Length: 312
Image (cartoon, rainbow, N blue to C red; front, side, top):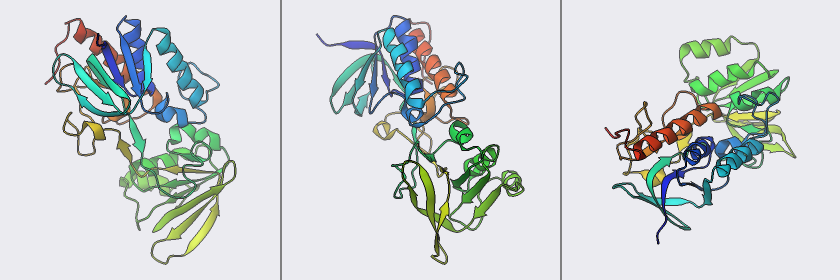
């Protein structure tokens, strides 16, 4: 006899695990399909200090495991598999992974977005040990230290200004001859004595032993290379939503983020919902992902009980 879940959640980050907690607690038969391990980007953060309820902060992996334990306490099942294809039409949806196929009456897509990486030697080695993609998450770890911010758009320049609350020195490394951020954001940053900018410059490699100690940069005009001693590097060259397997299945914006009704996070496919960083958002944090997960699960429950009507 085939197994049909009430709620199938694709993605085991904070949005997906919160959705699993809420749907499991509502006595809905719930499964989470996670590609790697619980927590998503949260699990790559050395110290999460801005999630309510943990005054001293918590390691990202530990917080991820707590969320997983809480979801499993309410009988949510977690399966580690990579989703390759989905069939979302009709009352029973099918999700096909490399390790098996799963069926459910509702689906919540919470696959998140991955930071666009620099693709240089040392980057992967030092993620969580000097390489970060979230100043709000990790900035306080660099009190009195030297950091590099890579990028020149609004997010990079704003986060550089934010980092001056903690760091002694912030160097913006930008491959072009001018910052692309909004003029007022640029003005604020350039007026900060802690911030310097290296224009026409790219990162070539990140160095260290247990943690980051320096970075090699190259001027794209002169090809001059130098190595700068630093304690941390923050990369802001964009995000990539994890939606490749959903192309031509669900509506997306031009960047690949999934579009959903803001009121209940429903999509154009009846019984399918979206939560977390996989959708367009102005602010991407653990707290906002958790809120999305709770709303998506509540909307799925209402749909299953026949209370709400979905779609556009």
